[in-house]
Figure 1 (cartoon, rainbow, N blue to C red):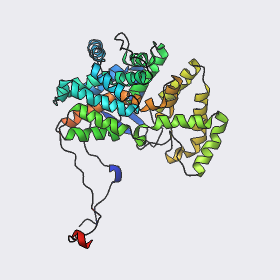
Figure 2: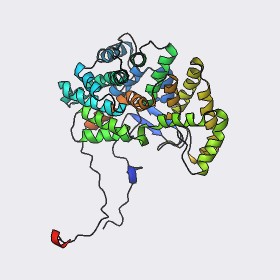
Figure 3: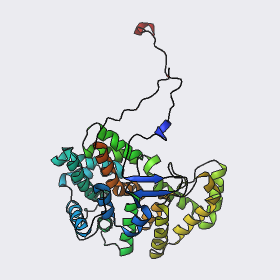
Figure 4: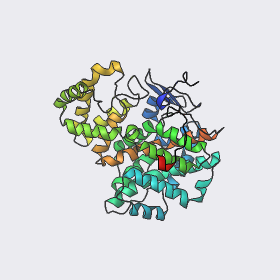
Length: 377
């Protein structure tokens, strides 16, 4: 009876729901948020505009953007007891601390328990504003410093760098962080977004779904690529060693970090925007060698592009963070900061016409058998 059951391991190729948010064409290498090309958004939009687009369905006009931005800026602070919890677990991995802090927010902010669509949107905007504060506060606390208070005069991205480093970023540095968030804001039914939908399917609240998403993102097979790329760059050391590094990896049938994607067969459309950012920031910071190593790896990998091994967005992200002096264990939390609006709208979409997500597994264990008393085993 089960002989003809097809198993799609990892649910690969399975459509479980409709969505009006991300349109991804892996063969062509294109990505659109609600009909807008990622290239136009990365070039022209701010992260705040993209948040509005994703969460509310349209790009805002000037007055709508001002109101939405004001709502984000006013929600950046977190309750002092949450900072106390961060102090208690300050030696943990930043993703574990972030997940714990979001759980604490759920317990300390009664509004988080509401589950209607308006509540999801309201809580989603607040969480989008608070997550950068949590990450920056942990970084300060674990290094023996007091957290830097949010600056309501700064944009989302600029304020993130201000809280993290305690100094106002240059216009170019803030814009690059902004683009990084835009590029990571949403990407369909990726592992963390799907996990969040599963949680919402049980009629749980948004904070619970975001905790699920954070737990899933923390796994190296999902969120760890940027950190792995930076480790690779440091291992290579100089551009002239890149070709031999790639040759050795391929000869040993080992993956070259930052190449290939579960969805894209062509180059990840987000990658080009980070590539130029790395080049410019490297020159600004007086460290152009990182970019040169990356490009040497890209050149060495060209023969394998026909097999779908093209550069992805995380190939460049890690070097940007490195140039800012950001510790490698913060790379995944930064990914989470950018992905917040995507998780929020995925949860809102799931809630509309909600259904419990309950796939099947095909049993391949032992046939039914009789009970054996313990003295006879």
